[in-house]
Amino acid sequence: MKFLIINGPNINMLGLREPDIYGKEDYRALQKFIYECCTREGIEPVLYQSNHEGAIVDRIQAAYGDADGIVINPAAYTHTSVAILDALKAVRIPAVEVHLSDIAVRESFRQISYPGMACLKTFAGLGFEGYRKAILFLKDYLIKNSPPA
Ligand code: DQA
Picture 1 (cartoon, rainbow, N blue to C red):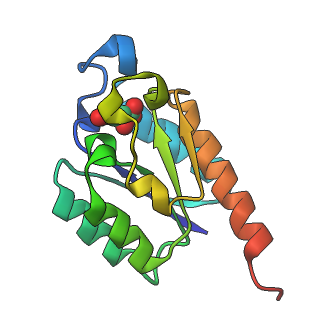
Picture 2 (spheres, rainbow, N blue to C red):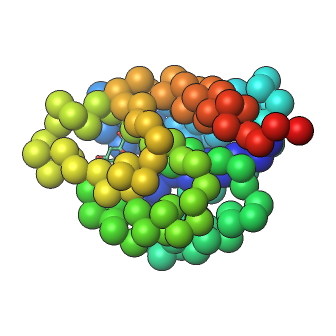
């Protein structure tokens, strides 16, 4: 099983950016955390981070026929990107949305998630742990929904 784990703009600034909201650990620590979660579950992780909407769309398209699942934190593009929503819908790869912070209790402009409309589930407000829950959820979903051998 191969998962593409996408992180959007400014996630590479973790540790530095608003640590009271996003925590003190940096992106390297998040990469390590995700890598360990996946390998423990027997999942091959492919990690991708970009600050550019089109690059994220390109990466989702490139996952067609390759990745079994997508875990995505679209970051600020969550609240604006119909293009990322459409890319997820186009490839029809089962996807789960993650947010480090609890977007539901933040500013009103963070209340809508376009990519989330193409995701099976959203984990928000759990910090790094949200990625672990997303990986486990997706693995379980794929096992339950795989065609019989
Ligand atoms: C975020 C929440 C978004 O609203 C914000 O723009 C981010 C990070 C999160 O992980 O909590 O960049 O996706």
